[in-house]
Length: 185
Image (cartoon, rainbow, N blue to C red):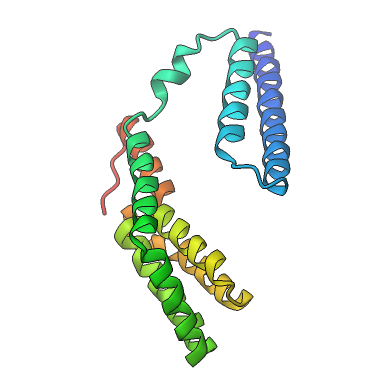
């Protein structure tokens, strides 16, 4: 009897969570379509979903707050600062010019080289800043779709070459270490 009650309560909480995720997806898609920055809507919907689920489960919200990987937040903020600093130094414009010059010589060569270069850079500086930089270059440069796709492949597959190449991998490693599980290089 007690186990059935727990399963029903868990299902209600899971439905609330799934509903929150669905609402978040709709809000983010709408925000994106309206060209609204996604940071604030993501934060608001995440906090509201967490609050609703926590209140309905009659749990202490401190559980969520203490389990947040606060040490990762400065890392992520620093990655955004790096991208903005590189933008201010003119590196984005220089790379955009280089991409255009490469396109004039050979589209096929640019497709291959841009994918591999982005994949390599993701492992040097992480895929978040590398992806942001590549996205800025692609937007500023108005490049063919095939080049955009090759760069996206580099951002997506490249970080798999090293543990620090992907922000998601870093977040997983932090969570696993918090649980006492170690993963070697």
